[in-house]
Amino acid sequence: MSVEPSTVSASELNRLRAEALPRGVVTATPSLVSYAKNAIIVDTEGKEFIDFAGGIGVMNVGHSHPKVIAAARAQIERFAHTSISVFGWESYIKLADRLNQKAPGPTPKRSFFVNSGAEAVENAIKIARCATGRPGIVAFTNAFHGRTNLTMGLTSKIVPYKKDFGPFPADIYRIPYAYCYRCPLHLSYPACDVECAELLRQGFENQFQADRIACVIVEPVQGEGGFIVPPPEYHARLKRICEEHGILFIADEIQTGFGRTGRFFAMEHYQVEADIMTTAKSIAAGYPLGGITGKAEVMDIPGPGSIGGTFGGNPLACEVALAVFDIMEEERLPERAQEIGRRVRERFLAMQKRFPQIGDVRGLGAMMAMELVEDPDTKQPATALTKAYRARLYENGLVNIIAGTYDNVVRTLMPLTIEWETLDRGLDIMEETLAQVTQGVG
Ligand SMILES: Cc1ncc(COP(=O)(O)O)c(C=O)c1O
Picture 1 (cartoon, rainbow, N blue to C red):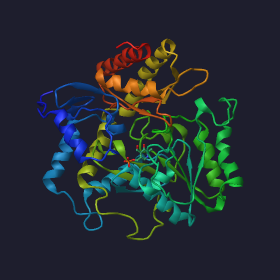
Picture 2: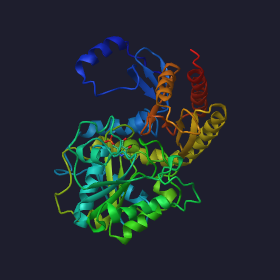
Picture 3: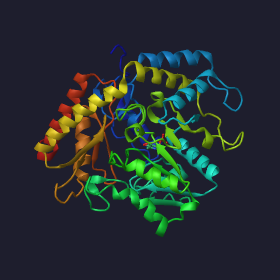
């Protein structure tokens, strides 16, 4: 890379950090980034890391893609902000149109933009409630939808996301997700006939009144919950039950969207058209942007001026997002995600033969994970091992983040543009490092 690393001392900055930031803000690595290119991050001391985290699933087109830089530069020269409530601009409108075209399903769509994933979810719920005139929301165990008050209420995991942050909003109900490795019904696919989808219907009997439920919100593949991939029939079954009761179906594609699972949007795998879909993360290659896309008949129900915000759809982020759509298509990144996923899965399955601590290998496209357990029979989560593994991966030059209710799922969110040689090197590090931490080699 041609950029010179900055010479600032990480230990000095980390000392200042301890004084300047609250302890609730944690960082997975003690390094500070100097610059990043495609799937490599260079820290302030010149050390290179292979990036298997992608800024939590944000860098699907890689760090510092030339087209992203060009789009951002061109926009910076023109104007920073007017607010969509005051003065419109081209990239906002074109991006909405592009999302509408790309969103799964044939029904005409509308889109608008906010600043983050949580804000996109907030708005999707707001619209669903307005459109149905009902208050209730059904979400899932292991779900993650954000950290604002409403989205915290929808998020499942208590520590660290919810502990001591209540009260949470009312009228949120939770049913088990299709977590086949730890089946809530203790059944096995396919003999189970996806009975877990029926838990929604059961909820109508003893948890919530169907005609007071505005929407079901679901991640096509759960992200923070541990890369949990439901069986192929699951979402269509849920959607059918929703339709029977006039309940809107919201697909949260914030982590699964933009090619990650091997299709542009993950719901394409399930052949389900959501009433509303939320996007964020990789939509704008690191610039803050969230999108709400939905059927026109639903999205047009809230009246003029009822949705929006000062910064939503920032011109720089929208311009970059248009570049992201181009890159996705030109470089065929959803197809590339399939190939990445094939290679990672093959490697993880080979590792599973060597390490009994790998209880489950799962994923969709490049959204791959392995769940670490103390014992493959008891499936007791190997939380401490996973923490040690991640720390050692970092020491060995690979940035990785964990997921799952028990913090025992090692997930991969590398850029979909990653060079094959870098991917293989990263996977080598994963295997060598697991050998080190499981054998206590040090
Ligand atoms: C599925 C899902 N929804 C919502 C969010 C919240 O997005 P943000 O952190 O941009 O608010 C996330 C973030 O991880 C996510 O994975």
